[in-house]
Length: 605
Image (cartoon, rainbow, N blue to C red; front, side, top):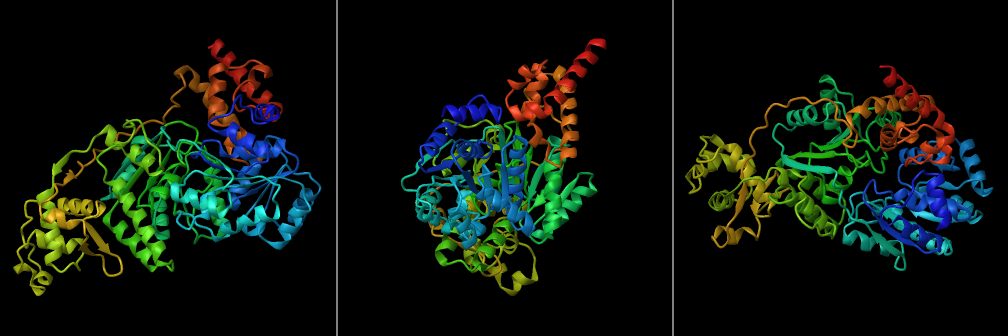
C-alpha cells in the first residue's frame, strides 16, 4: 500500500484515496478478487490501474467499447504509463506489435474487448504472459436483466478457470441488488470482497415532466441553463436523433447525431468532436455513452423515456463527472410508454425477461409521477436510504400541487371498461368529453353512461389524468394491439371507492427563458476567472497539437486550483491535485508561464 500511495501521488497527482479505493486496491494487491459498485465519476479506474502498476505483470482490462479503450489509453500515456489496446480498429502489424509488447512484459495495462479476450489466440497469448490482474469494466453487462446485456460477458468466468492465481475485479456504476447477485454468480465472485459506495450524485439536479412540446421546452431549458455547455440529448429512435440534431443546428448550436446506423467513421468523428471540442451537444440513442470519461458534460436531457431506472441512472450519470453542478432533464409522453412496450413485446426475449422488462418500465413510470423527492426514490431502488429530501430535484425545489382525483379517476376507468377495454387514450378522452364523432356513433358509445361525463376537464387535463393512472398501475396499455387501454387488478378497489387517489396538477406553462451567460465554476472568485480562462485556452492549444481531449492534459478542477493558488514554481505546481511527475515534467513550464504572464499583466494594469 505504501507503493500504491506513491503511485497515486507521483503518477496521478492525487494526495489521497477517495471512497473505497484504498480497500479495493489493498484486496487486489493481496491477490484477492473484488466487486466494486461506485457511481460514475467516483474513481473506479484507479481501483485497477494502480494495482496494475504496483503488481508484477500486465493488467488486462476488459472493456466493451473501442472508443473507450482509446480514450483511456490516451490518458494513461499522458501520465507516462505503458498502456495499449487491442481491437479491430488496428491493422495487423499494429496488433502484432502490441501482442509482442505483452509477451515481452513491456506493457503495464492492456485493454481488450470481451470477444477478443475469449478467443483461442488471445487465451494462448495470456498464458504465455505475466499477468497482474483482470479488470472487468461495465460488469453490469453480464446480467440479462440489465440494460446493457452482452452475452460474451457471461463467458468471462473462464478467467477464473484458466488463470486461478490472477486476481479479478469487476466494476460497475449501476446494479440493483438483483443485478449484483447475478454478477457474482456469473463471474464466480462468491469469495470476492464487495465494495458498495453511495449511489448519490448530489451535484446533479433531476427534473422530469410530461412531454408536450418537448422539443421547444428542451430549447428553453438550454437557453436558460446551458447556452454554451456540452451535453447529451437521448432519443429512442435513430430518426429522432438526426431530426433533433438538425433542429438544434438550425437554432445555432453545435449538435451532432450518434446512433448505431451511422457509418462507423462518422460515429468516431462525432464522438471525437464531442470529447475534444467545447460546447458540443451529442444527440444520441443509447448506443452512445458507456464509459465516456468527459468530465465537463453539464447536462443530460431525455426527449423520450428510457427503459428502466438503471438506464436512466447510467445515462444521467454522464453529467457532472467533475463534481460541478449539472442537470438531468427529461420530458416523456404516453406515446413513449406504448412504443417501449411494443418494442419489448416484439423482441425475441423469453417471457420471463419480458415480464422483468415491463416491471422495470413500470418502476420508472412511478419515479416520473412522484410527488416526493426523486433522489430518495432513486437511491431506494439501489438499496440505499437517503436521510431526507435532497433539496436539489424538481419535486423538492417546486413541490407539485396535488388534488383529490378519485372521482375523475373513477370516470376514466369506467369509460375504459364500458368502451370494451380496446381503445386508445384519444378515443377514451373523446367519449369522456362527449365529442360528436362518427366513429363514436358507429360504435354506439354515444349511448353509454360515461359519454360526456368528463366535460369539466379539458382533453389536455384528461391526458394528464390517464397518464398518471398508467404510471400508478391502475391502467395498462395493450402494446400488442393498437395501444388500447385496459384495467388492471389494482383498479377495482378504486372503482369501488375503497381507496382515495391524489393526482398531480397539470404543470403550468413555462415562461419564456431568459438566456444566461456561460456559468462560472461555483468555487472560483470573480478575480480568478480571467486566469482560469487563459489556462483553459492554453490547454485547448496543447490538446489540439497532440490530438487528445483537453481533459487528458488537465481536468478543469486542476486548472481551477492553479487559478486560485497561482503557484510560482514547479514545487508549488506539483502540490496541486492532478499534477503528477510526468505532467509536471511535460507541462509545468508551459502553465507556469501562463500564470506568470497573467500576474505581471495584472500588476502593470
